[in-house]
Length: 266
Image (cartoon, rainbow, N blue to C red):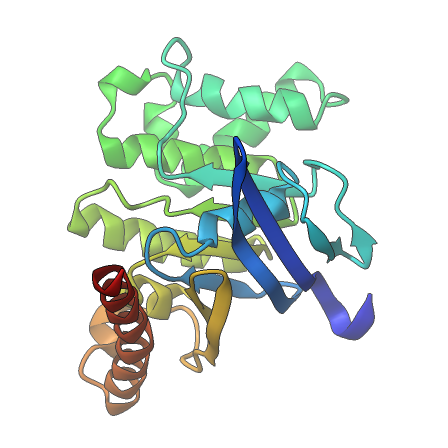
């Protein structure tokens, strides 16, 4: 694997087609992601963040270019990748443990029943839901349901975790708790993480590097040099934090304003 890169995105373009019309969602994207790195894709809605995540998951294929994992081209979804979405996507007829077990059964078919149950409980306990294993989704808060979704993603024990705005629908207090939890667990479980967000503070709290996206393109790749684990209360107010925050806000909102001006001109 060249230079210890887990993921290599090389000259990737992707085109959506609708009847006779088409448009490029991504145009010549290049990113190299190291093993164990936490990378946030930061940008406004419609800039191609989720499209890029779908390519990484193998749900779509690039129109041109290639995506490599461990030096090998992606050929559809694989057991080396797990996905956590914004919507919890839990099966309402299964308990918390049942939802985690469902994923384990698909990825670890050789495991015996007892082994699968031990694994499910291990990850439920990691997200603080060991005592809620027998609860159904309608008996859990939104934050609890998203913890189950995170546990399910971790329990697959995939090397790469793809997260598509997983905390976007959760209230600010729970969101902060889950951000810190995911940061902690990704380090403990040695995951390579690609995390989609439009929240600057979330990106700073989580990422080793932040890929600032604009429609079709990468605007900038910004390193985050704060050590892990991070607590927002420890960061806010520090000169380095405020400088980075201003830099990202400028990159993010200049792009948003450019798009507004273009639409008005049209």
